Length: 358
Image 1 (cartoon, rainbow, N blue to C red):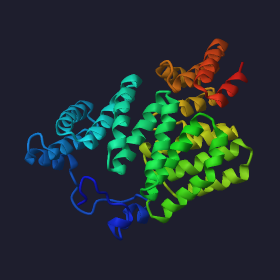
Image 2 (cartoon, rainbow, N blue to C red):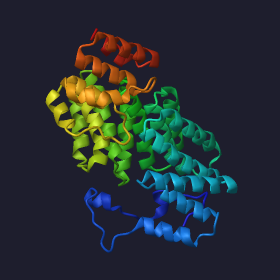
Image 3 (spheres, rainbow, N blue to C red):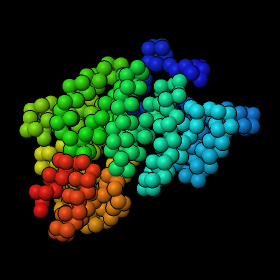
Image 4 (spheres, rainbow, N blue to C red):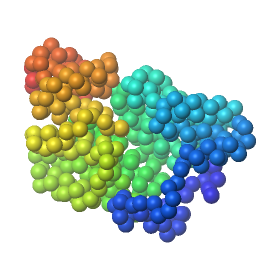
């Protein structure tokens, strides 16, 4: 087993063939099911009180879907990490603790915890830990409307992941394109497209397929569609479809946003209606794309049910929620507020789109 400061990259792990590469994810356990929680609890029970092993076991429990149990485990692990002077463990725990306020839309608290994570990263010897932490940081800052910090986290992830596996590099490329696509920086999407596609191809060649392969290709397709290059958009869309990736709602949270952006670029209301049948439940991608789809459909009832949840001042979602509400109600004052917020945040393309509505 690798030590603290070591890691197994794809080539180092030996000739491993992942089930996903053979079955596209449709696998079943061959024997009895594996009870992770029971295993972690057993490890915790035999670990020395206050030891690093106990801290790691508690950290594993902090990934629980039970918020109370997860936060309790994380706080206990954090105390161990601080007492032992373990910055890697502390970084992971702080990132886990930031998740719950982010879900609750307590963006200030989520960002405060993420700021602590970012301070720790330069001193960590394990780039894989850094990469994981940067994913959380990127989406926390993005959803909170701190676009410069989101861009910095994305750039740091690109630098960190460059020396890791093709799969890591796919993640970094995806963050770049999501940031540019959500904010309407289509020139940047097009400028990154060729390299991003090469990253996807390398990841597929390494037999480590990822839902973000699909996200990257569809965001690149949208960039081409926005420029009127429908042939290239169709090629990229067909390549994404050809990967054959499917999955439940968690996976759709990666697949639906770029498909919606592509449908918006094509003014394809039929596709938008199909893609918005479910209520908003994307775990990572932010809500603006979903609100734009409801606005394009003129779905006043759903806009008035969803958009008011996202009116926190200075967050990414705020101007999109204001615009959707303004479109639904025909309220030019709301559209004017949306325009002001887009301009203040430097989201120029969406500001221009909003100006056309006034």
